[in-house]
Every structure is written in structure tokens, then in C-alpha cells.
Length: 115
Image 1 (tube, rainbow, N blue to C red):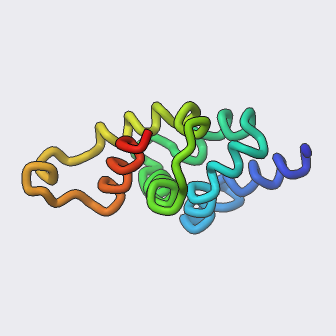
Image 2: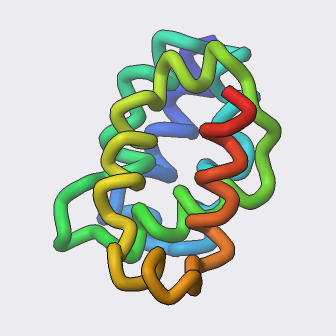
């Protein structure tokens, strides 16, 4: 339904909706968005999980919600494999040495082990 896409896109527009809470919702429910409209979900990954450091707080809100509150699905991994790779690259190596991973890093490891 085009009107649903329009509403989803409007909430991803930073001029309209800069809220971290909204990004968190998109992250948590990304598997369902991917189920309902895989094309839209694929096209929106860069907006939901931006890799530009300028928007790191937006990415963190979405990614942490996704990793910590979403179940693991192969079709979602197919869409987000580059996001998983990016998240692995962002892990602080000293946290591994000190065995002090964040809750989200541990969730990421659980996702990857399950997949």
C-alpha cells in the first residue's frame, strides 16, 4: 500500500522526525517490515541503519533495538548482512581482550552463532 510506504518514509525523514525513539522502533520491528514489504525494507536499510558517523546515534538506536529485541531470520540476515559486517568491524578489540563486551555486542554474537 503506497500510503503505508509514505508514512514509513516520512518517519525516516530527519526534517520531519529526528527522534531516536522512532529509529529504535524501526530497528526492533525491522523483521516485520521486511516481511510486509521486502523491497521497501531493502531500499530503506541505509536510512534505518546509517553508517555515516554523523548519524551514529540514529544507527545505534535502531541497531541496538534490532539486535536486542528481534528474533533471528535468514531472510532478514540476507538483507542486513552488510550491517552485521559493519557491526562486527565496530567492536572495540580491547573490549574482547578484557572480556567486557557490551550487551549489544553479545547479542550480535548470539545472532551470528545462531545464523
